[in-house]
Amino acid sequence: LATYNPSIVLSSKTWQRGTPAMRKLGMKVYESDPNSVAAVSAETRNIGKLLGRTRAANDLANRIAGDVAAAKRNIRSRPRVLAALDQDQ
Image (cartoon, rainbow, N blue to C red; front, top):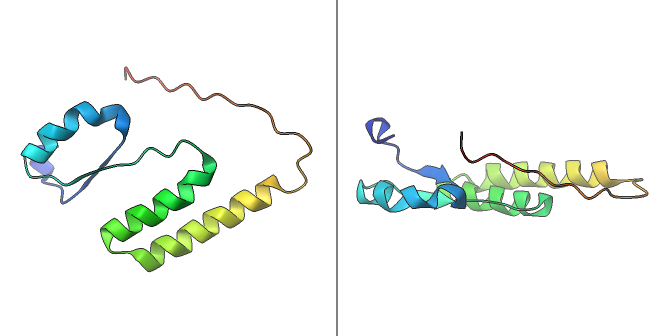
């Protein structure tokens, strides 16, 4: 990762043990880990602001929110879903 010399690293709390080392190398690290569908639009806006692409991020977040609203229309019951992600990859 250091050889790529990124100006910013988008990471998640799952990988936060590596954050201090990346910061020590001068990398800017932003941890984002939205834990709900509703949080995706807000995180999209946050990342857009961080990257200086506020307008594009707002457009994308609005599109995501519209897609989610459309997907939820006419649903009579909502199943409970568990997503288990393997961290040992």
